Image 1 (cartoon, rainbow, N blue to C red):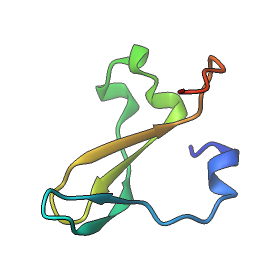
Image 2 (image 1 turned 120 degrees about the vertical axis):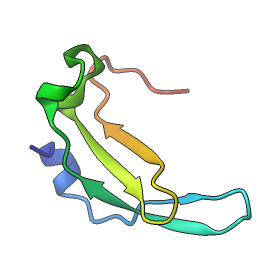
Image 3 (image 1 turned 180 degrees about the vertical axis):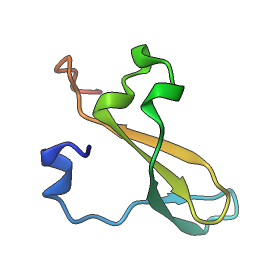
Length: 68
């Protein structure tokens, strides 16, 4: 289930390739039972590049870290 704070946002996720071009990331479903529960999949969403299949996990900051 998507975190309600994420679902309220309308965003376009992209990432840059080595050639300087940008590609969209699309949300993909994942099987939480197939992953390590300590990795935090329950509070995360998986996005995959539509061009190169690189994966990006987006999650909420449960420990209150600023990331700076």
